[in-house]
Length: 349
Image (cartoon, one colour):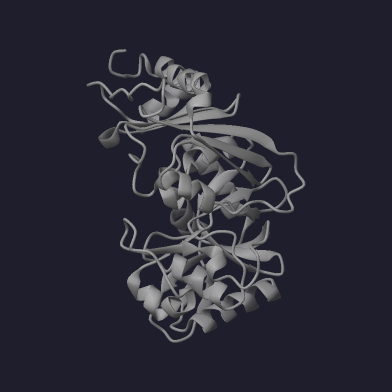
């Protein structure tokens, strides 16, 4: 097949999908997990991504909604019958043009040029393929939130959305935490978990606007840089830990530090934008919807390929529904957690 361009992109996507389904019996492993209203089944080979698919999700426990079946094939030429991925041709590549051409064919997709790494999804049939040059030739961030684009496309087709945000809650109610890297979002989530609060996610949460604003858990991973790891006492709490990840952070699981099982949902009462203030005590003050939108939407849309226009509409709706606040972070983890817990318990500032 010639190198891929916009003219033959949809044909190549259909070819990759059909190839994986035809070779289904040749994939060594099958991994299944129940997620909110979804049973995700992954066919793949052994290796780092197979481990992440086992450990990287929080399985739904008390979700009574009907579970649709979604099938993902993690394919590479080492699996019998799978051809090596094609490269993109010399034609101009833009994410918007790529997504638009696939959407015209009823498909979704993503491509990382440096790795010849392809992801294609058919939302009508709920089947997808991640095609790589070799078994572990995936981007370094993939194990932290495995198969994230496929879940984004599947839930987006239902009117839901994966948000790049953290979460903390108590008693079934919670707050979303939005902000760019270094704002203190992950440290705030960990501080809350260490001091008795709940969370349905650190980097990503599933948001449903169909009845209020509810957030559901998908991924089990938490991350902390070495300074936060030391300041929060995580070395003593965890006992053992792995090496630094691709971002230079320690990576561990929610249930390694949470005091209770992860709830199946949190009803969100506010959106907070954390800010490292340097002051001793934390404070919560109103922030404009515009500033909250800037903190929440750009990274969420950039990290979720396709669905750009619907993403801005979704996050605009979310920031209209929730009151928005600036959370100036104090220096003590227990005080930060207590400030957030008091806010949630009172239902506001």
